[in-house]
Length: 334
Length: 261
Image 1 (cartoon, chains in turn purple, cyan):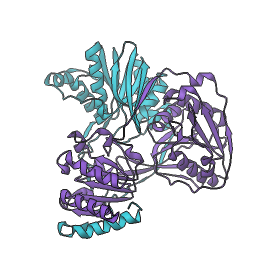
Image 2 (spheres, chains in turn brown, purple; image 1 turned 90 degrees about the vertical axis):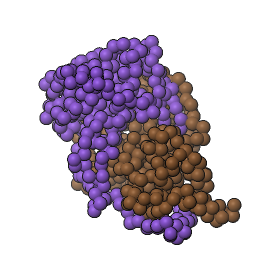
Image 3 (cartoon, rainbow over the protein chains, first blue to last red; image 1 turned 60 degrees about the horizontal axis):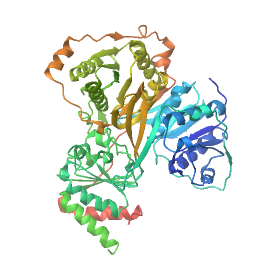
Image 4 (cartoon, rainbow over the protein chains, first blue to last red; image 1 turned 180 degrees about the vertical axis):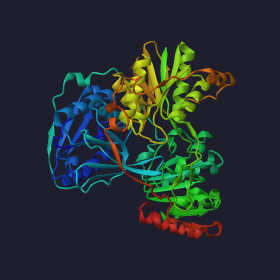
């Protein structure tokens, strides 16, 4: 165990050679935490087969150093390689804090890194700060479906590790900063894996990635059939958003599982969340309650969803949704 | 083929209601169930056993009442179950929990395949299973929505943000699964009878030969320092069926503010 306070390391997210914006969000947060700790440098690890993006934007977001690891074995996500590379870099750099996005890759790699290093990890943090007296990282996360917000720290083990969902922290303002790009020499063993990649299959348009959407329009049992989702799809297209669904709608097979919002599906936090015909079981509420602005459309005035909504439209959704579509089209002169 | 399934007993979120005054969730008096995604893991194990024979063993770490979850798993078709229970396990974080589960698998195994749900509906960390795999030094994968048995291992599809990723993992390995892997079956009468007859060994810290420093709160790298009970409710602008146009006026105004129009 070491207490060398060397840096804050960010596990960057690179998808098909492109740096995902959550990496900048974390670099910005890392900068803020680093400044609170008397100017700890912020370092970002980028692991890919070939970087097609300009990494300098990470300097402008707050990073001081980028560890760029380009290796052919990383053409497809490999959790074993990612964990070994990250752990090797941690062993060498001994960062005080390690942050990663709470995406499918971050949530897979970081637990493995935590187990390899024998340290703690807090998943899906919604807030990170530095404790005044101790300088420790305070990690706040929702638990039991948002019932409880727990603040957690890692007093003795290093690094202090946390994953953070995309869009939890804002994209930092770009500053005129620069830094260095280092290609670390890593043992060959880091790139050997028992897991054999067998190809990827990109989603074609359909579900999109609802966790990344600024606008989500979701439907539930109240749609009474898959046709309702066509209306929601129209609305989503007009607002350049995605389509979500309650568990009941998915179980009725009106729409696929990748669209499911809630505890047994995806947890989302868009700017605007519109729920049509969703009564609001706790298991659904837990998946969307942090959205910026919540609109509920339901014919039951007592629907629990209305309690967490900013705007409640009580009535027949098949009357309300077409009127909303018409208004938006009219406003746009379509 | 020897398969282990790691299950967790969780509160039945279907039964959780909101406190009308405080807007917080009420957990008191709520029943317990097997974490839903763990049922998909168990179903996957049973399907592989049908193809290749062998044994399905379920493990759960928790208080004595977690035995109910193990009995339910036996009723669903598991062959054996172990309850990992000890006051020394209390307050453990994901690392300390993984340590107990990994030791239990090591002690009763070896297993060709270890399965679990991608995350539990209460903690939602999804960390325990990957940590178990690393502690056992076996390859693992997560977010598995399809799996196919091969001679020397298993071919899987991970469902990730942008689609599907295919991987092959040789045995022994660990996988965490998603809801769309399969449709869990219901317990049979014969299964329920067998579940009542089967004894469930209990393993504590000493049986697993773990030190106090490795388990429970004292074995946990993380500490909870503060708990808040946030209110979920918002100040709601409510528009009844006769006021829809007014409500839509407000919504349009909001869309303009959010620069969505």
